[in-house]
Length: 205
Image: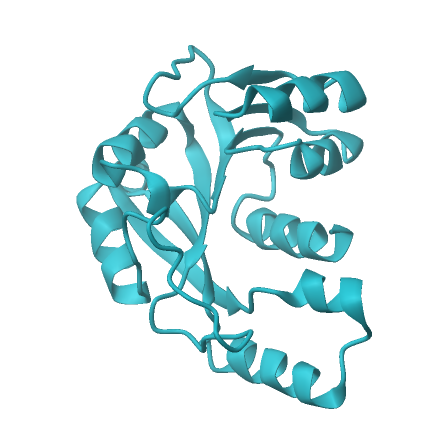
């Protein structure tokens, strides 16, 4: 995972070069959190799976909590909030994004990853995550959701789901690499990554 984690961190640092604290919403087993910890960031995470948070705590000694985002509260503010493969599962993403805004420092940024409804359906046969995905997003709809929730998109990127699976089964061939590069270059991959900032924070400057 390190390649993807390095890529995610470099994108975040581009827009928040002085970030020091990270909140990972949907942290799972803590792989991303541990990566950030090893790079000297102050990290905290939440996940709905007790099995996952227990493992993250025991294996990596991470500060994690078993909680939904709806039930989570904190007096701390964070420079970076990461929500990877979370937003599409939330009943009221608008309300939870407003809550996330209150957890960010004035210069803080939000990093979101969701399936891209209009992206190439790669690997072939990739579906829409039903019935677990309550919402389906495109760049336009996610931009609108973020806007009404008090955020502005700074940049967006696309990738392709299933890359790790291919590496686990075999080495990627030329066709794989060409499709990956095409979806990335043209921003039409089926995995959408967005970096956003609070609008109010920008207005205060």
